[in-house]
Image (cartoon, rainbow, N blue to C red; front, side, top):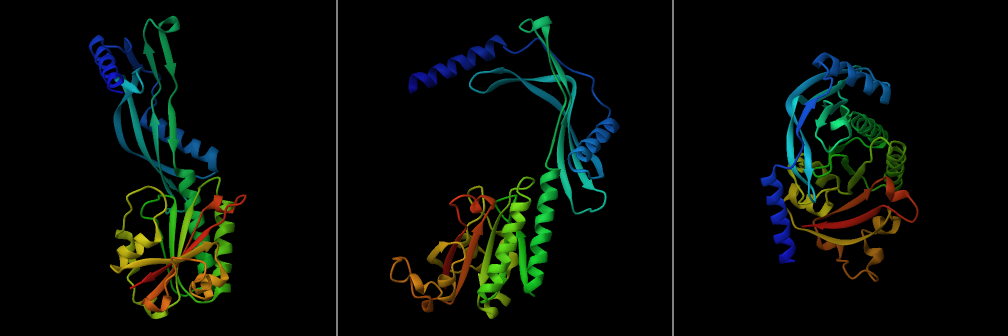
Length: 304
């Protein structure tokens, strides 16, 4: 292992000392800023059918990789080339906002290439389509919530840019199950534009729900990517001790109506729910939770 590390260091130093790379890199037919804006608008319209307002919010000199050894080991500046960060706003709805990057095309000149040069076209990427999908998903979530729930909270997940966290108060299994079915249908419908994970925190105790500052959830954090974990979040926005006392697949009727007691004889982790101040049922799902043998999960947390 040590020999390999020494070899890598040696090769890396050789590359740096010999100046490996290419002779030069120059921009190829750059667009003006107005032309870039028009190009982005046309690309978004082609992809989504949306009319948008586009503005350039950042411009930097463009550098490209010209030498590799187990990864890029040298970047060279593209003479006259730039990359641009753009903001893309739906003309009909200012809440749908995306970001994108446009990079100038360039030509690398060096004897290693046929005819002494290698051309790369301009490029453009954006998250506008995904952001539109997330907006539509959130709207459908809110519409579903408004059908049965007077009070609720919905936030973007603190560790997942494409996730949502919903907090509701109810002990009515049928109402909650109907809501979860609507959520399922929504995320499956839009999965090809925005792959969304979501967590539903279910409080049976109305007094506890009304006296919890759920806005503190937004200050929470996780030490990993992906959807945040219910136990971690409850501890952070309440400052209380939280213990998992049970769980199962999907939104299990027996577990929910018995507060976990239905599994007391088969689940070693179960603790009598009466020993806690209150319970939070945490339901977690994503589009792939409904594919094949996969299922969403529900966990029960005791809070004290």
